[in-house]
Amino acid sequence: MSDSPYWNPRHETMPRDELEALQARKLRNLVAFAEANVPWHARRLKEAGVSADDISSLEDLRRLPFMTREEWMQGQLDEPPYGPFLAVPPETAIRYHMTSGTTGKAPLRVLDSTKDWDWISEMWCYGFWGFGVRPSDTVFFAFGYGAFIGFWGAHYACEKIGALVVPGGAMDTQRRVQQIVDSGATVVASTPTYALRLAQEARREGIDLPGSKVSRLILSGEPAGSIPATKRLIEEQWGAKAGDTAGMTELGTIMIFECSHQPGGTHIIEDHYIEEVLEPNGDRPVGYGEQGERVVTSFGRGMIPVIRYRTRDLVTRIPGSSCSCGRTFDIYEGGITGRVDDMKLVRGTNVYQSAIEAIVREHREIDEFQILLYTAEGIRDEIAVRVEFHDWARERDAVLGALRRELSDAHEGLRFEVEEAEPGSLPRFELKAKRLVDRREIKGAARTGA
Image (cartoon, rainbow, N blue to C red; front, side):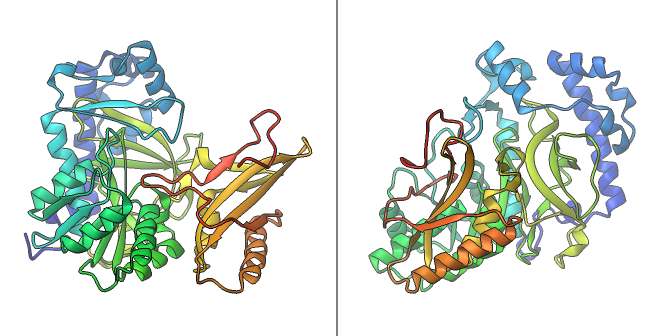
């Protein structure tokens, strides 16, 4: 396998007609399994007038009902702690994880069996191997190893590959940077935001990251991993290639990864998932090149069957032939570009954090930023972007002025306030960054106190 660029050569290069036939067979088996073992699924399938016997092609997928996060969370509230979704008794589980809490008021809780956990690490193997990680590598995980699923599966994937794993839990940022150098790490796994934070700390400590042995960074957890300006900045500060991945707690692992050819997007692991792209909040499929919402069906997790789950992720699908790597798996251009939930309406204009980040990161002088939405004079929505500069930055007023123009031009003329923040005053993040603060829903809240 060491000579192949593919973790699963047969499936990753399978002709599309064979791949779709494989998906159809797996879909039929999944629906049969859910019908027989999860009364919640059985009831919903019956109400929709469909059963496993009715599944003969991928066209039949659209007959199946959607799952939503709201239903999942309500199910866990009604039947705590795991809801009515388990296909086997919870006593058979070996792993407990929950969401990071970035969306919604309560975490989503999931369990995995031994078989599930092996599959979870297998999906990460597709991504790590596909980006060039090999048994000779030393992989440092800049990750806290808590209950959030995060890079847990990736850790075990690297062991399966045969790479040396260096866990970075229970360390502050300074110790992690030092450990990366001391361990001779050749690969670092982190969120995009934390990769920049590690680089900042390395500069402060006088550590030359581009001169270290790190040749690859594998990013996950935020759309920023596929934002070109952010990726370029990470690669410049580390002197290494950066590859994007994305997963979700509901699946337990990743479903997309960027290969070593860096095609400007992420391959879908299509032998283990069916990924639909639909109109946000609708059910009409959108075509190649059109943005829509990801809806995922997973074949791998046995404890919790996932069928047509509305992820709220925004993506644009393009053919796998867009990449020269030889994979037939389709690609999400630019990875996950945002979330339906993350869109903010400001005086009639749609605003996405990822779009703002794509502009801010073009300015190398900026170290960190924050987006603030607030109500002025109790009647008018306003948007402000606060930025911290690197200590070496000059011509700061010119940068602020350029940002005002660029942000306004990209948002239908919407006026942005852009101002400099005091050094060290904006929050830093290890996991998913929360750079957007919306104070409009807080009664009596004004701009101050952000």
